[in-house]
Image (tube, rainbow, N blue to C red; front, top):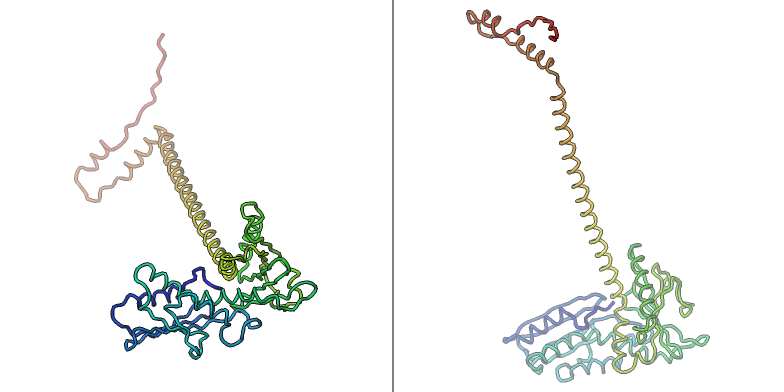
Length: 362
């Protein structure tokens, strides 16, 4: 759904470039962001004082808000960003819900100017937040059934709808969770269970209570089957009056809009952490196996060396003499030398030892 940062990074970069430039610039940029959001920034060198910003963003729910354009409440919220710098152009340009005329010369210099640029870059977040705020305020006009108000289906992304149910003393937001991979379902289920345990502790008593269930809650009975078919269950938040009072309303609304993005971010980080741990563990095991094989090879070499020495030592003196005699018999002279045969018979033949019996002397 929405991103964690309210201000669009790409839009903020272009507006800061126009704000800090000393010479007029000719700019005609189309920016596209997640959620079918489109920005169109136009600045002409012939008219350096005025910069036009057009925004096209899908509405949260076609059933509550007007089907064409933005509601009066949303327009008033946009005007409250910085009334001295921006002006709403009516009608908006073709293909866009909103067109703003920006006078960047009226933005103060220094850090205050950067803050104003960041506020203008967050206009799409203001539109989404104001739409959800208006739904929560006008939810009392919905039809009731069996003491409960009818759920409002909010569709920002086709695959990520969620429901808001206004009850007599609380507001319940239900998120059907869908994942493409089974491993993501396992990680997300563990995360939801941990979220329930942490939310029920005393340290987080002021936070909205969270519940997770693999089956749809009773408040969603009668909804379409395709909206209730999930593989990750249903996450519900109970929002009470102190969660939507004053400045808490804006924080609560923004947290609801970013819940899908937060869950996906957590699952992605957890999966990456597990993969890194598995890789490090595999490398350590391979290192252990390599060290063991090297030690085994060294041990085998030592054992073979000891065997060779033992064989040499075990040879008897008679076998050594026999081998020497056998060696002398194999000596041949390839060149005929006169007198060599007589020399060989005299010096290269082993003497014959006669057996002499010795008697013991008393």
